[in-house]
Length: 235
Image (cartoon, rainbow, N blue to C red; front, side, top):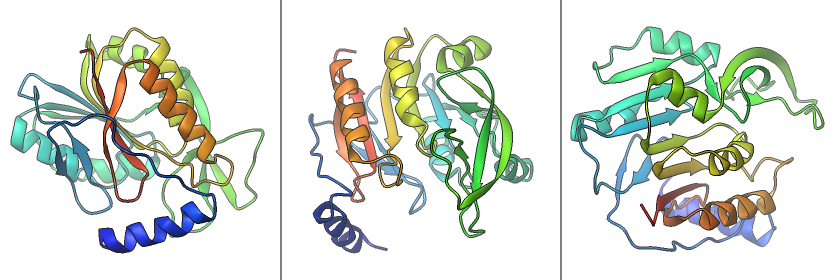
């Protein structure tokens, strides 16, 4: 699906109130890496072999991560608690600067319930919301997650140069937790999930406003309107 079709479909969502238009807020150099449907736009300035990239939500595509290693020699720390993703990663040959961890990112530490779609064509697990159970999502998994400050402590890091997260609607509580924590992050690349029935566009608007207030400004919005790239403007 090309960007023209993506934008056309998005217009329909905007007109129906299921999406909204968000413009970039600052101008920065931009590069886009990764396979189609798994690509991310980042600012290459200040990214080098000493940079640290955290990649949350591996799924079964690490094309972005591998291109970042090839081009910039960065260290990529990738995370996903999904059993399918863990099995897939076990069969991948990755460079020495790619490090995989079988746990996820959340606003709390511990084991939490994840639910998988009843539709076998959909693979991504979602953190179970006890107050809004989806009758179409049945099979659950009890999986390990950690807060971002906990993960940095485990890995011995004091900063993140690029944080990429596609965590199936868990991003909203994580954003609040990140803003309230002392973790220095230069860029935050997020896939928002306001398309989910129990989320809605107001949660994404609120999250963007919170990030803006913390000094993170938008330098890229994907054609889908869901992947948004932020940079710390006072870094």
